[in-house]
Image 1 (tube, one colour):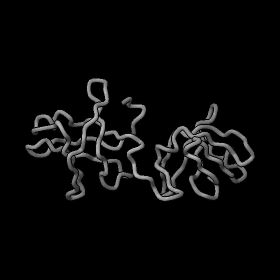
Image 2 (cartoon, rainbow, N blue to C red):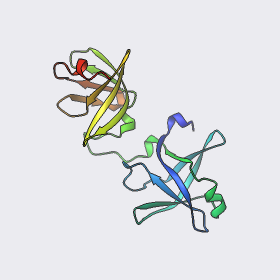
Image 3 (cartoon, helix red, strand yellow):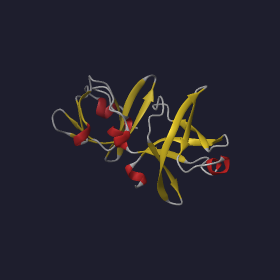
Image 4 (cartoon, rainbow, N blue to C red):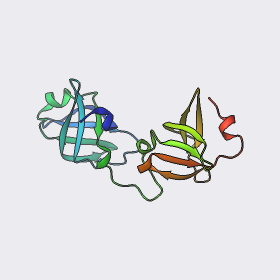
Length: 172
C-alpha cells in the first residue's frame, strides 16, 4: 500500500508494557480507535499491522499489534505515524464528511465558475473553512450549508453559492 493511498490518523508515542502494546496519540477527530488494521511506514514502505486489541484508559489509546511482541519491538515504533485505509472508516452521518474526503475536491460556483481545488480544511473559533488553491492565490471558504450547497465526495466536487465579495475579500 502506498502512503498516498492512506490517511494519517495519529502517531505512536511509546511502547507500553512487556507484551508489545503501543500508546498512540490519535488526531482529535478520531474519538476512539476502531481500526482492525493500521499501516506504519518503515524503511520506506507502509507495513500493515493487524490490531489484536485496543483500549482507552485515562484519555489515552493503546493498541496491541500482531507481530509486535515485547517492549523493545514496541519502542522501535516510537514516533512513527499511524495510517489507515480510507475505506476502513465508518460512514459519518448524512451531511458529514471526513476532512480527508474533501481534499482534492474541485470547487465551483452554482453558476459553473471554477474556483479552485481544496487543499486543506481548517478550524477557527468552532467554524470549519475550506482552504482552496486558486491560480496564484489561496481562499478560505466557510464550510457551512448556506455557502457550500452541494458536496459530492464521490465526484470530488463542491458547489458553492458565495455571498457577494467572498471570493475577492478573503484572499490570503
